[in-house]
Length: 306
Ligand SMILES: Cc1cc2nc3c(=O)[nH]c(=O)nc-3n(C[C@H](O)[C@H](O)[C@H](O)COP(=O)(O)OP(=O)(O)OC[C@H]3O[C@@H](n4cnc5c(N)ncnc54)[C@H](O)[C@@H]3O)c2cc1C
Image (cartoon, rainbow, N blue to C red; front, side, top):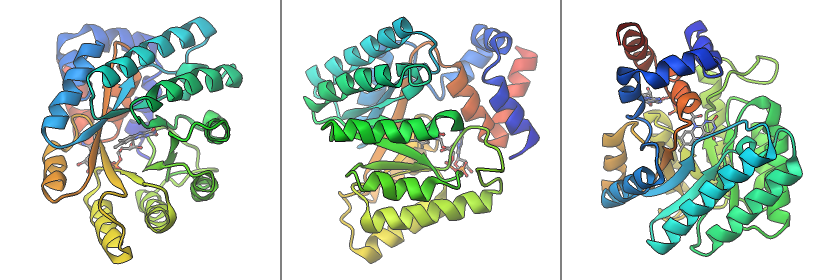
């Protein structure tokens, strides 16, 4: 991981920089390339827009690492309102939830209760609820939370797993044993070499191993990457294994590689778009900037000039 990338990920926790970035017109404009907008209406409009292009969606109400139960409950309320809209308007969308937004860091029982209620609500429209995977301080807690929710009968709950972690393939097998549908990703946080691959080629090799395994043994795998090489490999592997095209999906982020999204849909592949909305977009946006050198240059110029 480059020094600049590490610095930008660290900056995603800086209140001072957050004030600069969220108040400037130009940086806000760049951010809105990756975020549907600050309101639920914006999120719903983006779901309709991707649906018109033949994609499904997963809506994410932005926010993470809340520090008290009231904030967790108020975020859950916003997510339940989103569920209501998806249901009332028969939209092709599931939900993505950050466990630390539901209180996982300070009260795992509260996170279990709040996400369980979201899963029950989403069941009404057959919606999948995916637990986003966050920093390494909550990896085990998130995997255990997914297991616990599934044991409690929430069959529509799955989890994201990050190929940069050494432990991930074991987690892929562990959660597949519960029947969970898993989202495989490379990972977007700063992670120490003691527990995570640092070279892109190792992260990719780990992704390939888990992806091949999921396509052979997984329950509706969700292959979440914009990487051409991995997407081509997934297609070839699925065809070789005789996996039906409607028994797994590709996922990409809102605003990233839209042309490739359309190309996959035109080829008959399932494509789901992760759609973030809400006013707490700063840390999410900084992780998107950190992912790509071209984004970093563009962003730093805007920050200096606006
Ligand atoms: C649906 C979805 C859900 C995710 N959920 C999580 C999660 O729960 N936890 C987590 O840690 N991470 C999550 N991520 C982020 C993920 O971990 C990676 O950081 C991110 O997807 C970039 O990795 P990549 O696989 O696309 O490969 P990369 O090698 O990073 O990118 C491949 C190519 O895609 C394009 N690209 C990638 N990112 C960007 C960008 N930000 N802007 C413009 N172009 C870009 C570039 O052309 C790049 O060359 C999610 C990603 C997706 C697609």
